[in-house]
Image (cartoon, rainbow, N blue to C red):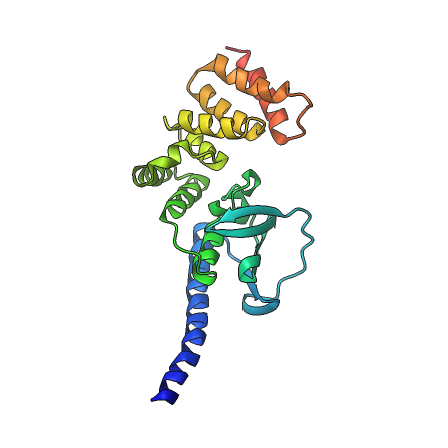
Length: 256
């Protein structure tokens, strides 16, 4: 009996390890289909050793900047290039490298706005491999981002409304990615989202730009111009893509 129990205990971790990668591989395939990626490769490293790989061996990538973010109670390090995403969970001694033949890997999640939780692939890694929990809230929002990227605005709006109905706190969460989503969908929640984001991050040019776009689409041209001027007239000057974009919008607004 003791030998039987010992055998079960030895087999259980191995079975869980196999199952977590089977689930992760399934979720990666699904994500690749949704993101319209035909070649998605992945490598998982645990305690310094490659423990799982999907596709050919990863090439070396020179990552210049690492971001730090607190997610699911863990400190997460991450970096990206247009078609590459790298994630490290130091507390779990886990790392992930994902590469694709499409920029949608990082563009759909708008990683430039600094929230790794907007990546469906990162969420799958946290859930399936790291065992960090299942976030229905983030999954709904991420699906809304994917639908928006694919031009399926009605589906995106339905998913975003579903998330807001279940998690009303999203409206006042200081997350610039949510502000972008609500503004693009022309949601009334954009006002509360913009207030929360700008109060928390007054020197964030994307916050002013996304809110300005919403105001412009709502034909509130004077308020929109004030948002864009916050970007173009900031001192010291911002060196950011929003500066040129805001100048273009101001030129357009002068016609009204």
